[in-house]
Length: 310
Image 1 (cartoon, rainbow, N blue to C red):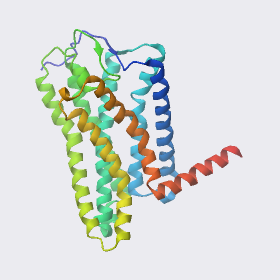
Image 2 (image 1 turned 180 degrees about the vertical axis):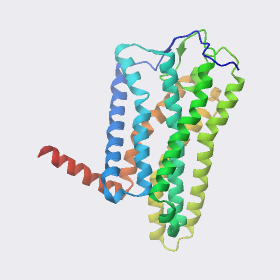
Image 3 (image 1 turned 60 degrees about the vertical axis):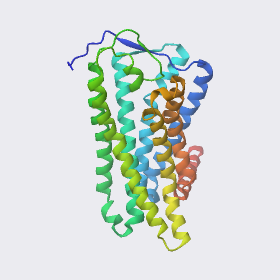
Image 4 (image 1 turned 120 degrees about the horizontal axis):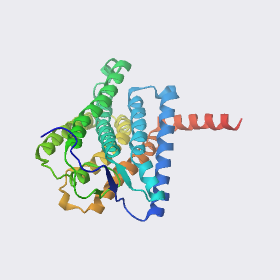
């Protein structure tokens, strides 16, 4: 493969979904709820002393990531609904693709860190405080962010060096891997193999670590002597397990199931699910199913509400 941007295209056209005004109102509502929910949860985890633990430290990272994740895609799409301006520059498209892949990979790694945290808390409670120190949590979170952004950078550099020609229309509402690849007129065999290796590193490896962690967690819960103890252990993991299932479930349908098995319109629906719906409901899952977060949220929101009206 020869390096250098040999594309003859300077911009792409995002075809989107259609039904502009209705979708603008709906997606704007989703976006605002996502921003509000994750911002409040991030604020609560940051200021509430009762939540200064490793699990909630990773949860704060996840909330911040979800804000960035949706902001990378939806402001551009919402502006297109209003102005009917659907073009995006080549560099802008590559940047959007880069941040989308980087943040998605980082989320996979953060979710695996959270599952490892639950594994230690339930399976090795005596070693938990020593292993999951503040320094260790900071290292794990930093490694997740750096790994996600560096590994995705390789894929984007390869993508930007390919030759794009012919149609400039991307049949999607953002710059994703498969729709972009359809516009390439040069040989993509090596690029696809390299992308598969790097994407597997960011998705499959964290997924297997998460799966192994929960196998050990389930085994430990089944060995607990009392029903009360097992219920408490399950309650501390249930929220995270729901989020993991939703996130990886949609990723598997989108990127593992053969493309011929679902239409382009169905691809867009699944994309909306993991780029908007999942980030929107994550704060609700953690706050409604977790008593500690629920109580802290009421305390923090109540305090700021009273201060606002004084």
